[in-house]
Length: 304
Image 1: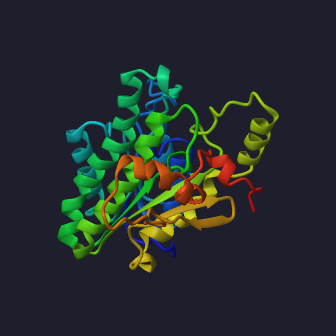
Image 2: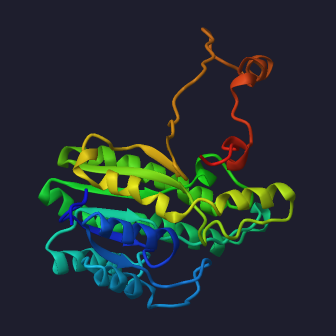
């Protein structure tokens, strides 16, 4: 092989299905040795097919690559340690972690149950922490490493009925930024990708209106395989200077998202009272307030 990841060892969580499967297979095609981690559950987290990870690993091996499977849960701290250790035991090191695993438990906020909120955060946010933290000592020791976390425009911009998912995906942005800052001294990089692709995770989008049906039709044209090149690049030595960033892939487009910074200020030499703010703030900041838009409202043009 002569790929951008030749010789590197990669862990892909949720690697047995959908976007994760495409990433695992794509990184292997770029020369990576892959640990395919997937417990084989449905979109909502129920047990379904525990063999999906081995099926993907087997397909990689059949094409001449190197891969092993893992069916341990990233939600469990000890299991996360074991997943990382399996990479080290099988391949001698670990160079990259792709935090892709996730579930959905959608509900409008006033009907969302605590267990629905907790379950989604446990997989997306706590799972990403567990695997990243398990890999951190190895990255520190070898003075190199890359983490790629899957966030979502549902969190970055917004969506209906996904308070748990939005909270988790925005939490991942903060986690990634913290890792990038804390581990910069060890040449460890951490970045986020908000992927657009037709997969199980977006297959639950309602299609009750003509606009929703049109949106889904456009999404179906965006295959998971389109995401892999950016993931591979971020894990390669060519991305050595890129960390703490938020990217997106939408068919043939790659976006770089901005991050929160002050955009307007109000100053009062004598300080503020609530009454003074009520008189001045609404008019002064009205044109700069972020509207309550969904992802589809902001990124509304057809995929390129």
